[in-house]
Image (cartoon, rainbow, N blue to C red; front, top):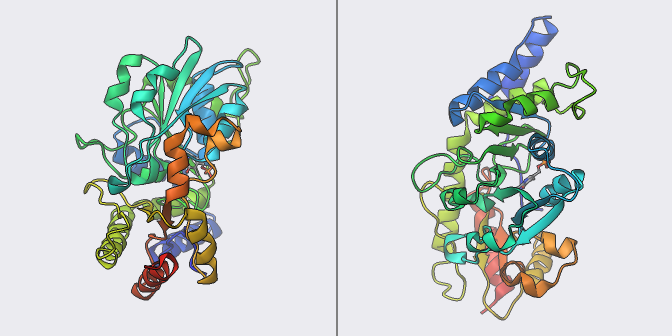
Length: 358
Ligand SMILES: *Cc1c(COP(=O)(O)O)cnc(C)c1O
């Protein structure tokens, strides 16, 4: 089976893990968490980076730092990972969902910025903006709202805004996941970056679970990343540029192979965006669920960019989210991660064409 998502572990990673185990078995002290944190800090130019043990923990930490309480509203996109909904539910807060932009030619399925203002109320305490599938949301256009922004860079780690700044440098707090299914792997893991220093004290308290002994503040959580995870993360981070290029090469392969299919829209993104996914729009005669089901007979996992969306999970009226519904019905994702061979890419393309027919 060719999986839809897969981590890419290299001999560099094996050497890094071996080095860690060797040091430990020689009873040497290692300072992996600090080293890796410093590497991340260098990338983002922030002195306030915290490694945690999942993206979900990072989201929870961010919402705790903003003092989100019961009945508060958190605005986000419907077309994203359920982890964001879970984090809002941890706080007993109310998710308020926006529909998306539907733009297959530049793979933009991000939150529809123009719909955010209508979803703001006096209860809105945060906006969570995941940059989906490797393509960034221009956050400049949201600053005037004066509501704290949490950027989720999980699916766009290493991509940039139009002005050239890295995604993750604009929000008040930024989070990422390093689950093995994401851009780079810590096996499991996550990251909190604070760009608005007003939140530094809260975040350090929340993560300092055996140092925070004060009963007047909310409790802390044992969310720190493990050392082996941090060692893997450091090694993977050093390979990020290679991984981005390999994804881009795979995407170029698909675009060439499918260029004679005028009934399929292939994505063509900017050079500082990333093919975290490779999402195509299907011709009208076939749906994404048909392609996904048929793909399994070819031992290939095709996917839908997001399925189900958060409004489906919350059983909200479909007609309020037409673009997310369209994306779920009309687009499929092809495996595009580093490590796919030319033979596999050929096989995926020819199977896809077989399935679609015509
Ligand atoms: C996977 C994911 C998360 C959650 O990360 P975990 O490490 O699995 O908890 C959060 N946000 C987005 C956009 C994700 O894709």
